[in-house]
Length: 368
Image (tube, rainbow, N blue to C red; front, side, top):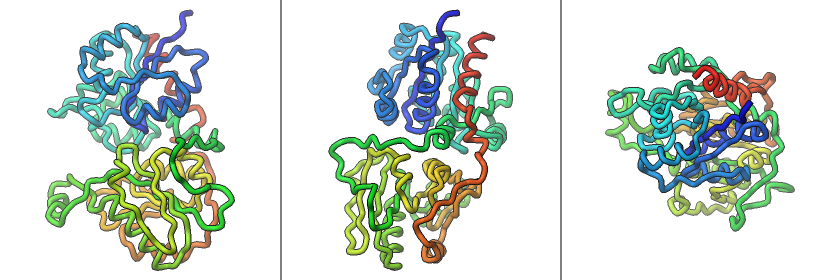
């Protein structure tokens, strides 16, 4: 039987991290070619997996020529929220070349938006979409994805968090960061995201239309976090992990006599959570990852407008605060350090998630 040839395509961190877990699990039995752009490049680089940089490939004909030269049996892609993303182009190319395509959803929102064009047509929908759990599948169907093209596999990324929790730090050289081990002070990790802010008028429009910014941005939240820690006189080190798409120069240094604040971009998240005493974020999927590792985690979204997009909070796995005074009251009541592990393994982190995704790929190849 010939070796299965799978082409992976990713440009976003979340999708790339899921695909990388599948590659790691089957690299000895499947021939993978990995096409990466933007923040996905660092994911495969950190894993020491071979990849092709397609950052400069913007024309679908050029990407199509590349896919033809590779001649894969199947294409496995992450989600492509941007209309011109390589993930979307790869699905269209796969359809034109009659190559089976499988997509992996790494979050619990934007289901249709991941694959819909400007007209709302699902022009970039893969033959099959793998989602993390039944909640995601149900929401995806409700959002407009075809029932027969969605299957529950679990998340390869979240499965690896529980199966391989002790990942050593692969911190990028040249970054000035505090030592994570042998600390006397508490370590608070702030997971930043690039979030569009909104004015009072925009907030009002959001309520009327149901679309827009959430009523806060990462710069406001980082300042609120600093102020709360200072007001409560909690001496600690805060390590702010900015999003891969964020620009370091956009984050001004925060000076404090009580708080030792550091801002970094490239650092191994899992190792960071392993040493953290508290993880604070807004709506990032990283909060779910931290919770799986047993770290105290909270979602801080001051003045939230519209729906809560924090999956860990929606699943009621972590506390959620839209009011600063409530967050301060909670913070004052805590006795750090401590751990808060989940009692059971969640379905979205099922141990065989990577195998489930690969089974979907193989079945499509066999039946095509």
